[in-house]
Length: 557
Image 1 (cartoon, rainbow, N blue to C red):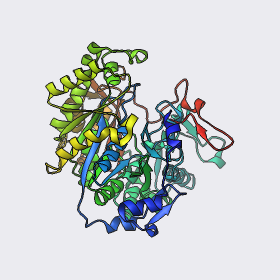
Image 2 (image 1 turned 30 degrees about the horizontal axis):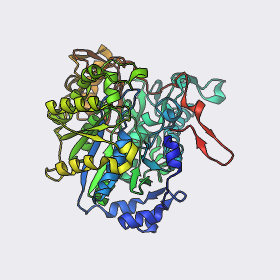
Image 3 (image 1 turned 90 degrees about the vertical axis):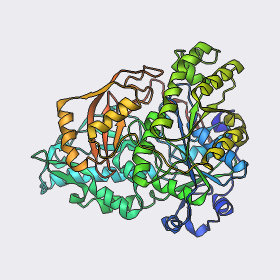
Image 4 (image 1 turned 180 degrees about the horizontal axis):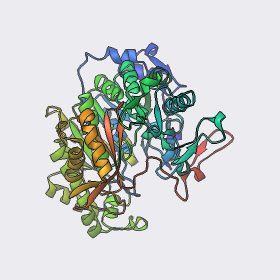
């Protein structure tokens, strides 16, 4: 059966009763969205602040391939397995974006028998959080244009507006546009553009905010542009925008509760991409999970060079989170792809390619253990096409690396297939104090922070940028020098070239653009040709999605 067929046969329990049964939370603290989704009130979240934290476990992966790795699937499988072996565990995931759902990547609710449900709702509109984020973002855009049309009392330079618009869809035609055409009644003509919602600074702010007051303060700090001198910043608070924006996000800030196929609770909240944003679910969700359960399993987007690095250097640094261990997900198929095998031939045994591709896993493992300072378990997400010879070779390669390697069959068997992984993780986290190390010191200047990530994690020999970008970073050092950096880079390679598989070394990382995310509290450095508005592929997933007269959806995966 397909993932959606498995999900549609799930025996879900009403979420209100399930949350009461699992965590003793009364219905008065929940805002239900139908029978199987609910939001948890911030008042209840705040009531947990004096409770002891559980153990935080991060699930990350090798560099993504078209073969798929199964990071979300593993997060769900591990969470279910922890509950099966008698531990009190909860999962924290990001919300899927409609862009990849209708594009190439597909949904993000897990797969096989390790899924969160209701799968169709989660992958489509869910509880409306992304809609609220998009509207709040675009309200600020409308206020900017209106302010200039109405006399421009702030002296905003239309040529130096930094705030684009957003939409939760892959639409390359909107990357660069002209607004305000049609005469004075329609405002003024200027160049503009769209990003995808998951790249919005409002998304980043929601995911890093610690409460309503912090949310509103961060929204007010957004730099929307500059005055004619090119130096004097104009903030969202200058337009008195933060109150209305926060009002639009009044429900979006509340964590969403759903369940797995095995009726365990998962929190799904926030959804920045890790290649163009910081790739982690909300601080509120993670901290709530740590208070509710003894073990909180969370995931960070794409490979450990992107999602895990940003989880450590941005989220953990800002929120004072202390992870206990990392699960590094890999598949035999993906490693063979990194070893040079074409996608069409990945189901054929190829030991030489597997060994060649192992260098990708090796670098990620060393990054996690050496630069993040965390114990790491390699989880081999098992596929039916994997041969015994390939599994044995992978185990030997991991042993030579000094890595614990667990073959997990959660896709086919649910939590039961991940019990060995769960026991391995428990054995680690119960015998060490939580904590990690950062890739760079916050006192380094911004250029050196970018260089540290590129050389330490990506295997680059150096970074380069235009004189204009270098000057911009130097100027920002005075006011924002302690900010972490968020590198927007292809997820497909350690380099900025998505076609360079394995573990390329000695390359140069070109920084093509830098952006200030003052409300979020970090600097975005765009590496190479990375787009913050993706496009649809030649054959988008949307062409295969349908709904029948009974309301049953097909083709969503």
